[in-house]
Amino acid sequence: MMMHKEGIGMDNALWSGAQFLILATVVILGIVFIWVTRREVRSGFPLNDERTSRINGKAALKAYYVGYFFMAAELLWQIIGNEFLHLPQPDGGYLLLAAMLVLGLSFGAFKWYYGREGDAL
Image 1: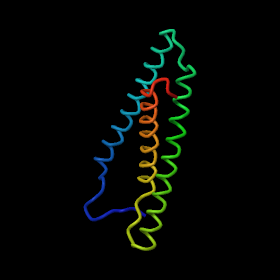
Image 2: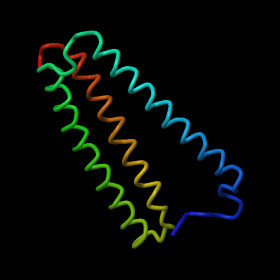
Image 3: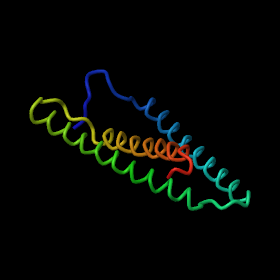
Image 4: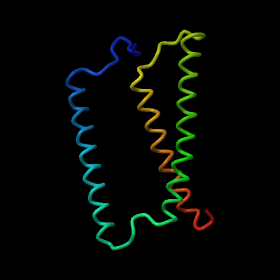
């Protein structure tokens, strides 16, 4: 069940363009990831020291909780909207995409925050 209204949607030409942009973004991000990893390996410094592991662990745990509560809020929104308010159900793909964005962005934000916190971990 998708939320489509008259005139809203992606036609084939627009969707083909979007697919190409998604593919190009994934390829570019992959190239950047490989380039950064190779540069760090060649620098001679260890990729994961104790502090970095602790920062990543704390950030991952906090991002897990944020993502978990976000998905629980999405589920409650679905139930309340469908059962009581009779709202149309959004497509599950959009809900999954929103959850993935929240998880990724919250991990990045927590990693940045704990990285700036210094040795107070």
